[in-house]
Length: 286
Image (cartoon, rainbow, N blue to C red):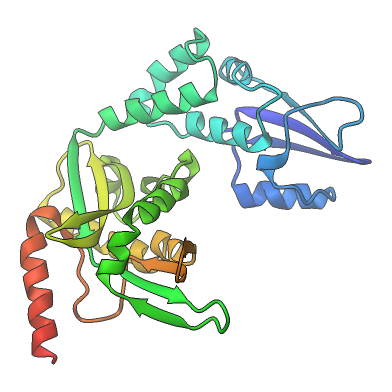
């Protein structure tokens, strides 16, 4: 659902597009008119003499009220994020959200996004957390080789790991729940899924906090855990493990997955049993 339209002029070239849109698609469209600037560096200004000129307009009341929240300090990325958040809002909050917009209840996009996040969380009263082991590697600055680090080292950088995870999931476009398509019934229940880290019995683990509108059945929980493992190995986790965390010893890369027999992903109430089983495998394999 397009909420905003844009006329973007770069030198002698003009792009007519609409939002929300996939970030990479926006970047490709900007490249098509010769601009290499990322959307977050393009202000929403239409002044003569600007390197890039942007004119936004809307064809709906919701879109027009959304425009009121965007000023000259906003960027093209801000416009897309706001449009994405409104267009993809949960059906359970859509009516209230649209009324808030039409009655100008928000002063800026930050208030809008915060309210959408809070209202969405309220639709998911059932909370579940899942845990998995963490792996860490330090990259040699000179040779590029990776050296494994222990959990004690990971614990010393828990704050930095958590901060990077929050940054990687800060935008509505990054909400991982939207990418779940494995089961329609689970999809209808899933509200949010957020990756973080947490210490348990002296060791740092990966933790995935999820909200659901209704409790999952035992079978649904197992299906959902399979999706989480896939995200840890090939989806969000694969992307995250390529993001460096600066340390005194070099760049730290953290993974929510490994290929060993000791790997597990389990619900919080299963954690002690999973840890015991993984430790047993380690001892048995010595």
